[in-house]
Image (cartoon, rainbow, N blue to C red; front, side, top):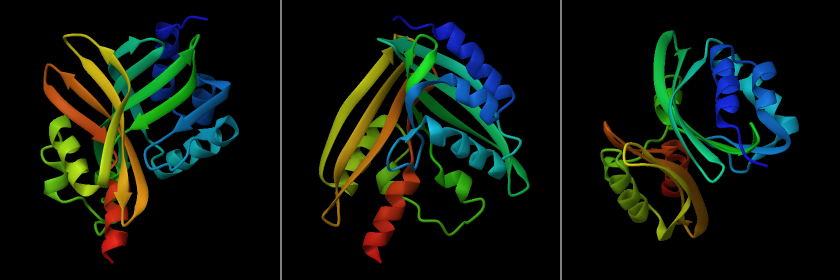
Length: 213
C-alpha cells in the first residue's frame, strides 16, 4: 500500500486546530506505536488517548500548526509551530513530527522537541545541559556535544527526507553515562533559515545530574 500524505496532513491540521483524543487517535493505525520526547519506550494505541489527554490537561489551550514537511520512502517529517499557556504566559515552541505512514495513517510516530525550556517555566531548578554540550543548537554542535557527554559514543542515521531547499535527518545517539547505556534520538533540520537539531536536552541533563550527585 502506498501513502497519502495530503490526506494525513489534512487530518493532522484538524488535530492541531482542535486538539483532543477524538481528533488525535484517528491519525493512527490499530497496530501503531508512538514515541514522544522523554519516553523511554514507545506506547501503543490503547495508551495514546491517555497520553494526549494528560498533555491537554497541562496545556488545555494547546495549538499546533504544520509549517513545512518533506516525505521519502513512506516517512514524513513535519516541522510544526506549537503554542500554549504555561505559568500564565503564552509560549511558542517548534517541534518535528516524524511519522511512517500506511495509507494516510501512522504506523510509527515520533515527536522531537526540547521539553526543558517549557518545563523550566514550572520548575526553574530543573537540570540543564552545559553550553559545552548544546553549543548553539546546530546539528554540528549537538553531535560534537553528545560525543563529549557520552562515553563510547555512536551515532546512526535512522531516516531522512528532503531536497536542496529543506532536509530532515532523523538520528539516534548511544553511549554510556556512569557505565550504563544511554540513548537519545533527534532530528537535524537544514533549511533556508539555517540548521537546527531537535532533541530533548532534559532527559540527558537529568541523567548527567543523577550521575554527578
